[in-house]
Length: 475
Ligand code: SAM
Ligand code: SF4
Image 1 (cartoon, helix red, strand yellow):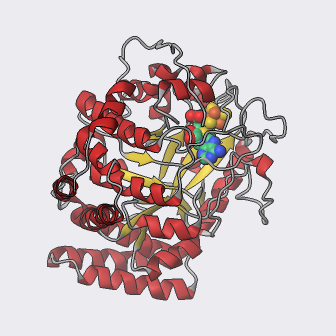
Image 2: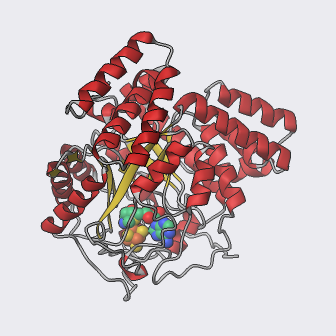
């Protein structure tokens, strides 16, 4: 087990005080006892769609009997069904460049990895990548960058604008999210002006001393600058932000409480929590140098996803292709609302006819490389509605405003109908016959279950408009 010696870390952003107190979090974890009654009370509170406090989250984390863990998973499953219905949002990651001045011990892009094949897409290559994603039916992207002076806010904004501009056949990208290094307020303003959706930054580990071990060089060594990044994003007017922790660097129980603490901080300061929470587990990477003893087992991983779902009922939760298909299919039920599909993270690889599968070209090893249509097919088999919806962000339903809508009824009024319409578009434009047959059946049975007759008629009307050639219809 790696030992962490306390070291000072610098907070250069004086406007924001650090809001993670390791002693407070460990205090909750060490002093909270999980009785059966208490765990059941907490699950019931969450099913009543109330946010859990840190003591309650610690109580779920500390519940270790198989019976209670099963109840936590069942609770998460029920909550997911009642809040999110049967839809699951799909997106694709698109790596723009892997130059990096940091040296994160776990990452294939780290500056000291001489085996990494460094590449930044040219504008022409970027257009080709996007065309090939559009050819598959993708509508939502997350653009990913290393941290390097070349990837300035202006450059990020430039690539976002290219992504929105490429239209091939019936294809177009309707939402571009970002995963990139923390910026200053001015930088966030530049990126916001390009029309991004979510700005996503993972703290990697919320434990300051552990953080110091993994990030010794480059700008990323500054824990505080990263921790306060999304405060600066808010200050710049970006109210749609995503948080995450890289599980496997430190004790998963600490990271779960810290993610909830970060959520509380954003809610308290800006009246709006994170749009999404991500919980990547660390995977093999070229040049990786990790011996942590903190790797998270599949069993603990499933439990932590269920606990996060119960802790923050209204926050979107993302599970990526880092995880194998079988595990993804299982874990989706416990609270995941977004997954990537048809993922390839080798730079420039979407436009290639055959995948090279060379670890030196990507950031880490992915474990679910199913094509988008195969994932859609399998979601339909489970009676789920794959969704490419981008309506909220385009209608300004984000931030505090979005939180107002994040109440029961919202999903019924907007998300389910929009999921149906975007799936219908996909079936018409991209799906092979067997997927289309399945897809229409799922659409019809989902519409049947809608109790609002006016809404039902309106959806059927919009579907016939899609069939006669209209596109991009939403509520
Ligand atoms: N370079 C920017 C940064 O570090 O903020 C952009 C993010 S990086 C390209 C995307 C994320 O991938 C990181 O925040 C980290 O959590 C995750 N990551 C890095 N190495 C990984 C690995 N070996 N396995 C799984 N995820 C990894
Ligand atoms: Fe660079 Fe990000 Fe990888 Fe760290 S995680 S080496 S900052 S790309």
